[in-house]
Amino acid sequence: MAQTPAPAATLHKGNGDNGKRPPGRPRSEESHRAILRSTLKLLRQPGGFSELSIEAIAADANVSKATVYRWWPSKAAVVADAFATSSEDELQFPDTGSLRKDMAVQMRRLIRILRSERGKVVAALVAGGQSDPELIEAFRERFLWPRRRQAYKRLQAAMGRGELARNTDLDLVLDALYGAIYMRLMIQHAELREELADQICAMVLKDCKER
Image 1 (tube, one colour):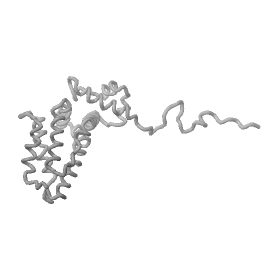
Image 2 (cartoon, rainbow, N blue to C red):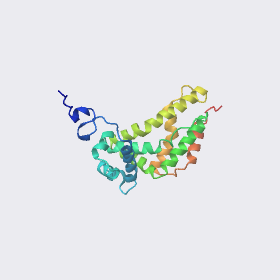
Image 3 (cartoon, helix red, strand yellow):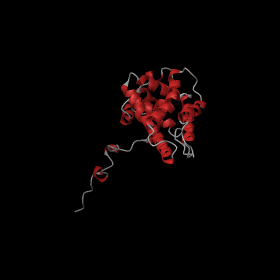
Image 4 (tube, one colour):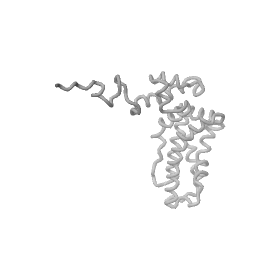
């Protein structure tokens, strides 16, 4: 007797039912990028961060709200990631062999970004974060700390070359280097110009022993 063919569903086991993808499918990089692009786009509209919503982001990116929440727990996280991703390549630290040059170049790049439309995103995150712990945490974890860890490596390399003393407080150095930049961004008591990077480095790293 001829063997009865197996049902189609059995033959295609592992491909999901009715053409649906199985749980745990790889995320769509195209949708991911679209969400980040839409977030930056909508942030430039009147109302900025305060008027931004997950619903608006999803609609503009042509994805569902569930898709957005699959990757980000909150609006703050999406915004922080959107800014971090848009500036990631620009804010890489060079490796010239000179700490002062490395820091000045990267700080100039940061100032250039903060002077652009993207600077409003940072200002909104920092300002709003003063009364919203979730918002400032998203900014720290998704933007500040990744950059900070890169800066630590440059400072540690400088210590290895003898440019900085072994007992240098790395956090204090970084706060001194970048604090004035963020103060001018937020307080606007003086113009935020690229030349400020060179002036700060000359002051903070004046005892740096370059080779």
